[in-house]
Length: 187
Image 1 (tube, rainbow, N blue to C red):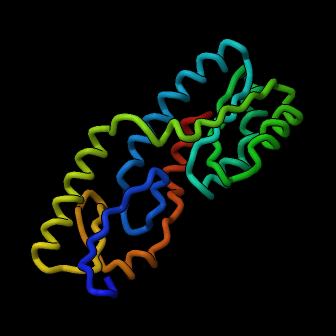
Image 2: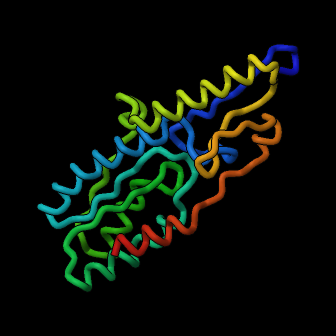
């Protein structure tokens, strides 16, 4: 855009790590793919009374889950829980060391599964299709209006656009409320 080409950006990443938008195109599809795979892994984990660490893409997020995992496993084991699944974001710790450490600390057989690129493919969810269509429509309309150096985004169910430079300064905040809810539900 600094060389005169009109640019309107649309956020697309399965990591959902773009701070200016609540959702990036591809995130919902990758999330649903991971949930489906984890459901299948749960069947084996349950039938073999073990822990399974599932590494999902997501770059450098998930540190809190990494550090709270063993204590929650031990509390569950004390209550008679025979199996558990831990979700680990890539980059949040050494995957193999985590599996080994859990097994050593809890005495429960621990296996690991890396979903990897399986999360990047497949048919998009309806949410991602609608998100892409609405963001694309907004981008085209902005171009038709003569706009430049903008990025489309969704915040609080509102489709917006903002200056690219300003959008890039926004850091993605860790959603502590969502983490606390997940923590309660995973007991």
